[in-house]
Image (tube, rainbow, N blue to C red; front, top):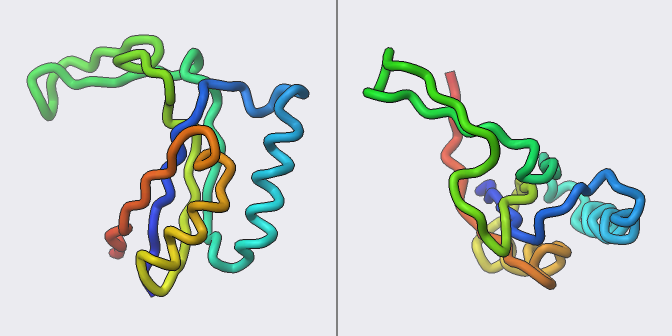
Length: 116
């Protein structure tokens, strides 16, 4: 069965804050309904906590870090789920139930298994 990364784009929020408890309950409800189709996932802290790493000159070059993401956007990468679904249509049906799809977007991408 293929695995799909459901990459969540939504508003930039601290999902651990008390005022997000209702939204987090919606995510919990999705996970309960989706059951074993959800094989992994996580919410991300706000972009203000991010550090961007670049290596100048390629492999072995100088490591450069900056605070935050490279560009500001209305919707940010806010989390992901790993979904096992028999096909893309089934993955789309699952993604439509993820709260990020209701006011942001969910990008579905097939996962390439990395073994060994």
